[in-house]
Structures are given as structure tokens and as C-alpha cells.
Length: 361
Image (cartoon, rainbow, N blue to C red; front, side, top):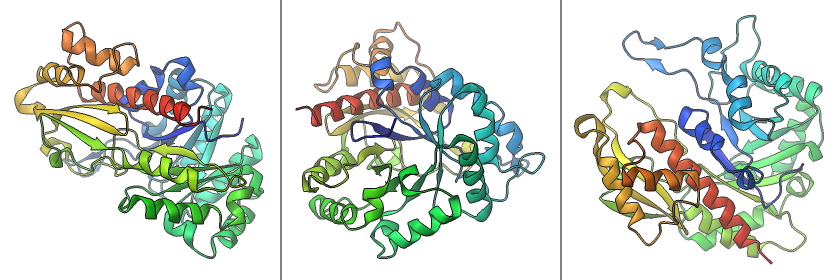
């Protein structure tokens, strides 16, 4: 089934908090979510100055987890964060190995590529398509999309991959742009989407962006409202498009920045934060660092959320239910992965509702 403007494309790192958030989505919301799964590289051991796992060890559980957490539902798979030189035992490219591993489970994955991916990566996409026939997704930047040669570059990529426009999804990933002025950015996007025949010919088009802070150090407590500027941008964009133009799907990075966390985790002192999506924004309730102050402070953070006007009730999402239960003491204060699934699950549920309301007749 092709992706439409009613579908939501969250970009999710394939980590415990994220895949548990997918697993806990309720069926009506699952049917409107097409996650873009980013495979992260193995964690780095700063004591030995080596990756903690080989690439084979790092990827070995992906197929089983995908089957358990997402079943036979559509998803994009991007292996672009993995070292381009990495190969599995036997010499296979990690992307192709992953596509081969999920095939017996019936998991319909669409590989994601980009203009800058090397020949080995593009060959893996081509070989996956020859078996699965699902084409691929082109993940490009706004700079790529506004390039006068964009259409030519897409044609060249399709020649390399061995299929046509109607088997290509285009994902324009703005990452964290300067959203101001919002109207100006929306007008630029509208002009871009209507300027190249490549967008009209594609199987689908998605606009991805995020305004979520790169660091919680910049967020002051005890509770703060942060604008979901990427959602405001999308709502400003759609009315600017001609009736005959492609209507893009909406995507974001959930409750996270687009950046991959770096540095020695032993030296970091993350704060207790509950990230709760509301209309046009995120409520972020923030405590002190959990290493020195523990996780019990999450009950106070949850109370700040449930006591706010933006709280949607325990029945709205699995994440919202957990926030209420933690406040009341009937659920544990969990760990950092717990609060990633809680916030991400609620966020995805909220975005599906937002899109349904926005496009309601």
C-alpha cells in the first residue's frame, strides 16, 4: 500500500525505548505509522577504545525484534549511520544482510538510500529490490531538493538502482532547520515540491524535520513548553500546494533531536525528563540528574504533566497511561529507556490524531 498524506513517518533510532514504543502502539494508530528505522553503529567502549560489539553481534537480533515489535507492517530501513566500510562475516553489506534476515518473517521493509551513499550501499539496495521488488526511498536534504539538477540526479540514481520513479519514495529531511520565518520556509518547500517532475512521479513524498532541542541542558525546569515547529511548518505548507500537486506525508524525529548522541556515556549525567506531546508543542518536565538524585523524582515530573492543562488523560495512549500510573505510584519510575518509550509512544499516538484532525472533512 503506498504511503499517503494520512500516514505518519517517525524517524526512530532502533533502540529499546523506540522499538518498545512501536510495540505498545494501539492497532488503530499502528495502521497509520510507517517508521523510518535508523540502524545505529555499535556502541563504543571508551576503555578499550573499540566498539563494544562486532557488526554481526550488533545486528544479529534485529530481524527477531522487528517481527516481535512491529510484525509484518511496512517500515523504511536506513543503514546510513553504519560505517560504510563495515561488512558482515562473509563480506555481505550490512543493509543487504538485514534485508535478507527479515524476509522469512514477512516484514515488508523499504531500504533507504541517498545521493551520497557509496557504490557498495547502492548495490545492496539494488540486490534487495531484485528479490523483494519494493524499490527504495531516497532520503535527501533541502539543499538537494532545491538544486536545479535534482531531477537529473534522481534519474541518475534510478539508473544505478535499476528501477523507475513509481518505485521510489522521496523523503526530504530538513533535520533541524532555521524555522524562522516559518511562512518563508513553507513557501520555499511548496515551490520546491512543485518545481521538479521527480516529486510528481515518485511513489510518495514525505517532509521530515524536528525542532526538538539537541540537549536537555538548554531546557529549564520544572516544566517548559517547546514549540513543535516542524508540525506548524507542515500545517503552513499544505494550503500553499496546488490541488494538482503532490501532498506530502509528515515526518519528524519523535521526542528527540536528529543528532546521534556522542561521547563517553560514563561521563554524562542525564536529567530526569518527561517529554509529553501536546497541541503544537511538547511539555518537558525536568528534574535533576538521575545519577546523583535517582529516579524517584520522575513521580514529581509526572505530576507536573498530569496537573497541566495539556494532559490528555490516561486513556489517550499507552505512554499517557504510564505517566499517570507513575504519578500515582502504581507504576515504577523505570529507567531512561522507559521514559523514551513512554514519550515516544504518546508522541506517535498524538501525531496520528493530529493528522486525522487536520485532514478531517
